[in-house]
Image (cartoon, rainbow, N blue to C red; front, side, top):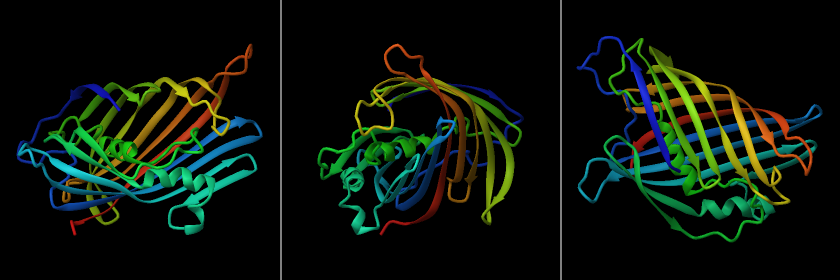
Length: 297
């Protein structure tokens, strides 16, 4: 996933004595995150399509063997649960249930759970190199569905540091992040997000820095062509009607403890030959929660 950005910073007086505002993976620690993504699509006035995914990811941080600043992360998915609903039809998968591994949906997801990724991060915690390991899964029987393997682990690390473009920000500061992001080989998203430093706040008995953000995104994404796909083959355009969220950054562990992002958008899905594109309202809620930071064992 390629990513480029520019930002405009509007600041108050800076305090050079305070620690930088940015997430840091420290060598010698294991970081576990739980991510939850919920997607609701109003396919027709009577039909709703829902997807709920919960993933537990583990990252072991160690020093870079090349002697450069930064860290090396070994990332893997420890748990995964997926719930799909389209009208009256429901499917589910839970990696902790042995009986789910033999189902068609289970075989699809197990293929990616057998792999892990080594990520090299620079001193700014940006991913500069990645290498996949583990058993390659069999060809997925459901190519229209997403997987949750090395690519998603890499994206999670990138998302954790997104928005922390001004490490010296103080309460009251505001900055704008503009850029584009390639989504694999299927398309590109363009976004503009404004971040606001709201000062200290309590989150689950932790003293955190509260950062609020909001903005817009739009783009085109190529749809997979498969009878099992959620969509039909073609180009899907979408216009973000609104994007907003909040980040709780814990300066004690130098890491995002909780982030939540809500997106309301309209999808434009190609219709059949001669038909007008379908306008599909969609809502997405994505939560990343730091489970714990412990010494590597």
